[in-house]
Length: 366
Ligand SMILES: Cc1cc2nc3c(=O)[nH]c(=O)nc-3n(C[C@H](O)[C@H](O)[C@H](O)COP(=O)(O)O)c2cc1C
Image 1 (cartoon, protein in one colour):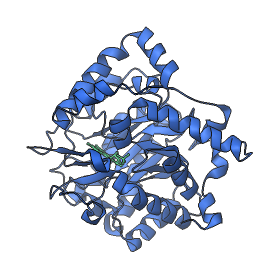
Image 2 (cartoon, rainbow, N blue to C red; image 1 turned 60 degrees about the horizontal axis):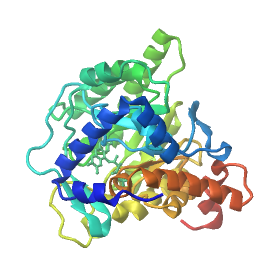
Image 3 (cartoon, rainbow, N blue to C red; image 1 turned 180 degrees about the horizontal axis):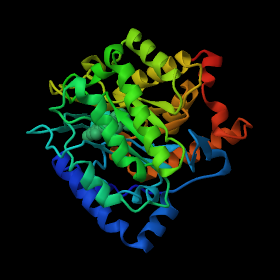
């Protein structure tokens, strides 16, 4: 399947954020033409019995998802299925609309397959998102990523996240809790024990209250962690998570580590893409080990190939997410990765991709 290089060439001549908005508006237009959805799905979507899984009580049709931040306002929504994804995350959305940082906010580094962003959660707010996506999609699994408004203090943050959970409960299959963006000051401190215990209690309680109201089970809550989390904090976070039901982890968000990167980098912002790959895989291994494989981990960071995807699964990821790889390689990458995982499962004589989860621990690769 040929990559439409001319589209990428045109887009990569534009300023990154302008290109992004152009892509979103084109996809929004295409999603309303059902013949287009069918054609794209035929071209990009791949599944097989070996790729289906039940994780956190949810049925995933393939393990490759879209990471949050790409469609912050739910404009493209279920059309991500036609682009090959087995699940997708909207947001990060905040309680009140906010503009994010001013000035340039995304930088491309094509020779390093990397991006740097300092967006700061620009979004239309949770109510606008809900209005856009309210009718429950019958498509692949949809997660919603939630974050605090910039002006909300760390002390008030847990009740704000709890309100967000109540608001999006009816329109998301799982929640992705963003306490790891480097672009909201001190956000990652919510992972420190001083805040984290109460934080988990508050969001857990909101989940339970809504579940009771709708007479359904509580939904999975995935805590998204930073690759820059120190070992002590990670140990304490995982200890708290293990004490509760319904929790999983997304590893990882972007990094502020400037040593992974040889090009001149903007001073502020989080690095994603290829230079992040090893750091995020190491985090997955650590989390898998700390939690003894007892909680689902969504592996994210620098996936550009089947080999990258398999490495994350073997390190302990039950599911995967991609952002930067999708920007550079488009939907053909999503199909390629799903097909490649399927082929690897057959090649090894296994029944299912989940048989590979955490295998590098057995072989000692990480
Ligand atoms: C431009 C941009 C915006 C992002 N916005 C968000 C966001 O709003 N919420 C979030 O949790 N992660 C956000 N991320 C992080 C990605 O979801 C992902 O965790 C990270 O980029 C690593 O994956 P990748 O190397 O495949 O891009 C963003 C990343 C980029 C590049």
